[in-house]
Amino acid sequence: MRTFEISENIPEVSAIGLGCMRLTGLKSDSEIRSLIDTCMDRGINFFDHADIYADGEAESAFGKVVTPAMREKMVVQTKCAIHPGSCYDFSKEHILKSVDGSLKRLNTEYLDILLLHRPDALMEPEEVAEAFRILKESGKVRCFGVSNHNSMQIELLNHYCDNEIKVNQIQFSVAHCPTIDGGLNVNIQNDAGCNRDGSVIEYCRLKKIRLQAWSPFQYGMFEGIFIGNEKFAALNQVIDRLAQKYDATPNAIAVAWILRHPAGIQTIVGSTNQKRIQDISKAAQIDLSREEWYELYLAAGKQLP
Image 1 (cartoon, one colour):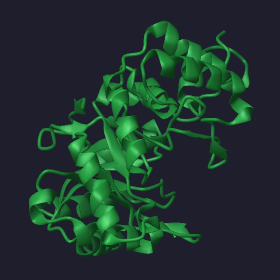
Image 2 (cartoon, one colour):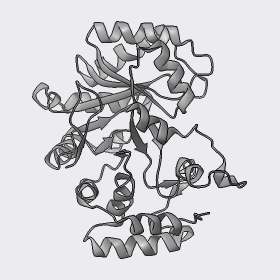
Image 3 (cartoon, rainbow, N blue to C red):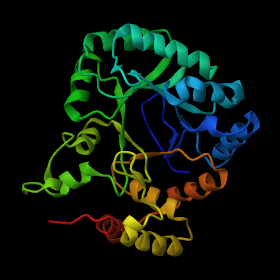
Image 4 (tube, rainbow, N blue to C red):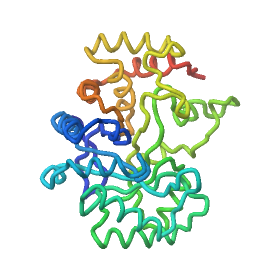
């Protein structure tokens, strides 16, 4: 398994991570443990959580089956700051309370990474900085990041947080990559050229902030999966041909497209199917050519200027 570095104290994270949102869909503790074992056997040591996944039950399900010996071989990340259907909350009080809750549910003494889940329009960065300082000095959190933030939102936070932001998790797939579209359509008056995120890929590369891709098989905002979808017939035709060439599954090709980007974008997959996880893990061994990468991009309905 290919690995990336998040920070100096988290140097070896698998290029593919398991998103744990759907853990509670498994029927038993033994099934959850078996899924985690499959990941570890394939070199996937990264597990992504959030306090809102199944209202905290996903974290609890994970914490019930992970032993201390297993935990030391893992990189565990969780997210906080969403009050579902109500508001986003970057207050010091909420961040500290959320971390304590996640630690208890995950049955661990520390988080490797804590992400702020979505931007809070009422954020006071001084409060965030104080919460981060307390969590780091207490040993509860080793590394910090954000999710779904643009460049200037990260810049503002890092100005007050002594450059603690090391991760930005964004929705990203061959069928949903507006930050790629904007970068390719510079100085062109079309919808694809609209810069909606402040050139976040280029910014994160400059600042050495690790990008993570969520929903690597989705198009739109939870509109559906493009793999095998007749709406993306041309894309699936290319995916299937490359899957045959590389002796891989279509899902692995979709992940390989993300991993091919020189930004080193870590990919979070949310499957609870062990066979699918095994198949997807092969993506880390596939190195698509430049021509194949662009062919997939164009087949997804994109256009080059």
